Length: 499
Ligand code: ZN
Image 1 (cartoon, rainbow, N blue to C red):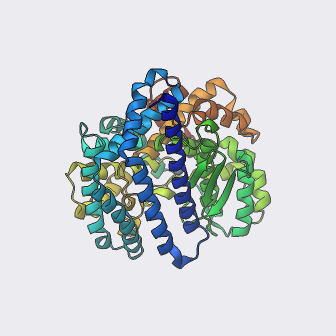
Image 2 (cartoon, rainbow, N blue to C red):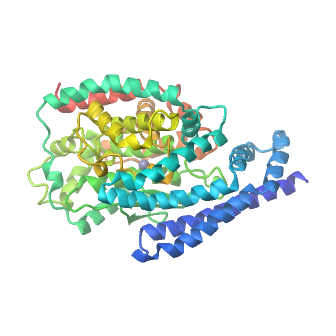
Image 3 (cartoon, helix red, strand yellow):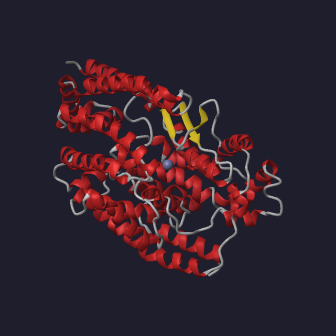
């Protein structure tokens, strides 16, 4: 084989994979947005075939030969192509270790588990989900060995979401967060609570939709390349760097729910839109990892979106949209309300300070489940015990407890820690950004462009060209240190609550 011929084949392979993924994503998006309720069966058939075809295409032994050939020619390759070969070879090796029958059985299992989880959550009946969760855990322990047999199973799974992250890294991270933030949470409990009742007045959905348009404008999201839809759970989906979709969920009795969903998903979208378009249609496209992705979304949502400067900048406009609901409220009251901290039951509704504790609880449970020291039948009691210990709250039922998140039903174990890591990565990026540009001067003017430009240069544009650890190092100019995150929360919340 000639090198040119091999490069053409590599390109063709990646274009086909892009096409399969685009088709699957479009069907998925249709299903959760505009498709009629009783139409999932037909899409399921098509999605199953597309997944099978994609698997067949990529697991073909000819692909293995092509990648081996290109690896031998590594010295002659452009660095961007060399990176593609590296990433594809890693995925190919993993996939080829999973027997086809197990792969198919697992795809079916996650599909069925999703339905079972929905029903179990609706009726708050863990027993309906339990047999599926048992199988999912067993599969993931087995798959961890296929991913990397030299690692402990949970370390191998963590590495899939955030390359380089393992239990040692997370124990140190969560240990520091816990020891420094527990005293703050305790002190807040002794202070008079912030009044945020005006955020839960009646906020008509049609006005909220217009408000979302305004927020997208503030964030600099180009509506010719990014639209907003409505789904039960907000998410961001990227087809390529010129076509990104976000969704939100409106609740008539909450201003903050959709506001912060839009800003959060908007952060994900900016990342996707700013990846170098040269990586479209190949494996370097899109954000590099969950942790780095969350560092961007949570950066806009919390660090910027819940800052005093941002609250001041947008408040006059917020009041224009909702004059009666916010009568007598000023920017400072608004700032305090959007930062009210109170230990609670639901992760997605948690405030910035207590959020990491929700993640920590899931991490502790996953670590034990995959490590074999906790049985699935004991998940609810362990969950409730940890919520009491870490957050001091009593879990009334499994719907508001271990059944609240969909991640496990989709087979995702090792995903949760990226949420907390992302928050911490974002703070360390902020410190570096503050050294280089006038962050708060810009935010006060409602101008996020210099911030997005900085993130584009340091994080977004690389796509998957570098490993997450290298992107982080590049952005913060050194090693990751959780102390920045702990300090940031200590300072912010002690000022808010006046101690
Ligand atoms: Zn997110």
